Image (tube, rainbow, N blue to C red; front, top):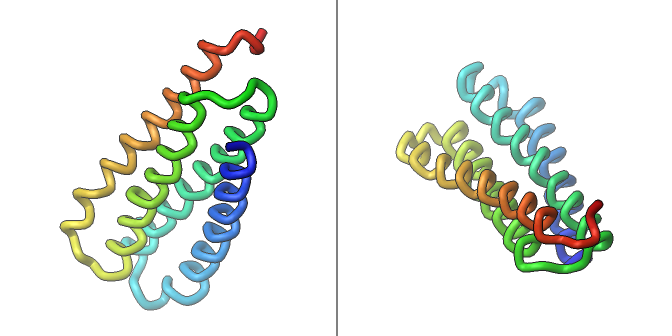
Length: 127
């Protein structure tokens, strides 16, 4: 599990940088200020939660594997796909119905962080 989340975290971090650069250099002049703001929000949350995956990977190495950590990691991955992914597509295409998907990603982020907390509360290795 540690290697899995380290891989996902590093891949998603690299992807967030690439997606951010794409938005800043190629999209901004084409989609307008409002849409680029939506896009940048997606990049921001993408990057923060990819870092969260790296934190989970490190935590697995410190306190061991647990269901809570596994759920935390996969929920952050799902959140990036649903939240950031929907904002990317919404900002580029203008399809407003995609905005209904974004909160599902937000819920996945919150649930992931609560699972992460649960792993600490249940671990005997944390002092």
